[in-house]
Length: 191
Image (cartoon, rainbow, N blue to C red):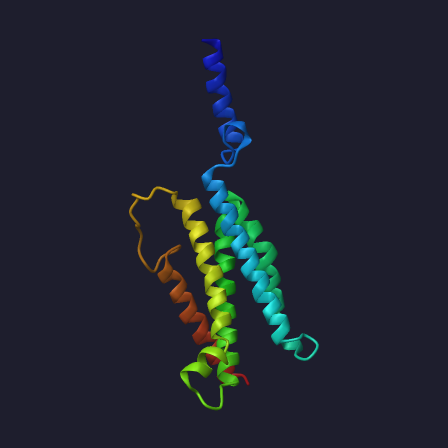
């Protein structure tokens, strides 16, 4: 009887200390999936930054420094924020804002350097569309990580909430459109 009480007590203590480890110190499926998603964010962000360095050397165009800063934030700060329950929301918002800022800046770059002959192939291959898709892949991985950590891993749990409210996708669409309008107006009015 004392052994059963001890096991129950130790189970409660160990679950409050570290819910990510199972008996024997093995990793839970939740921790495993979270680790894979964090590694995916880091590797995609690193690949995007290296691609950015190859295409836009900072020595030639110093104004491209925003891309380097956002790349470093995506590789180091965003995964750190996603790693802890208390900073998960901050990681989610920073990850989304970096995707929006990158999308706006790269779309502007593509429009400013539009291909001479705009064919389907040239729009796909000679613009920053592939780079923007990398950004949104990182965003969606972060969204999956946030949703799984916040709302749980129950496959039968229904999706609830107003579409345009935080943390749903409509909230991000509103911010993408709003920041795009502000950037466009600023670019047109203050050249």
